Length: 152
Image (cartoon, rainbow, N blue to C red; front, top):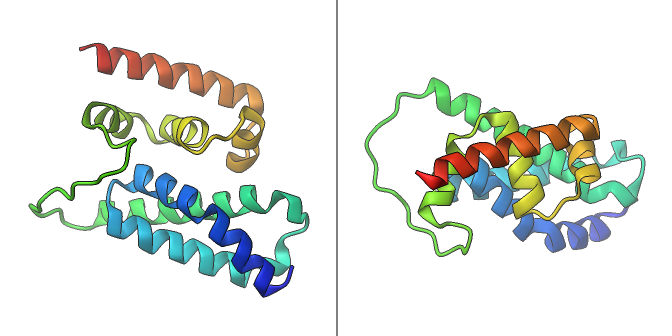
């Protein structure tokens, strides 16, 4: 894949990547930084992409790994009081966003990929390197927990 083609394909999926990162991290500026970092890492590792038809899945996996790194870094930092950054995104309704943030990490990944990024179960399984049955089970469990949280 040539750099021009890479740039075109990244620009097509960048809004979706940003939404995923925002849901994972809950911070707009950090999400933008992580998407840029994932794009950089993908460009550097472009020679490792064996099947260009799986470009979006490959790039999503890189983004997820970068989000995990950022979350680990955030856990080590000392939290401080800061103002909440309001967002105009349509998925940013407070009860749903709060409920998703409360989910365990492995369930949160499934919900974000399936319902906010439009991935199929097979694509989600491939992105997370999990069996499809595991993705399906985690999806059901996540939906049960969200129903309980939102019904309160």
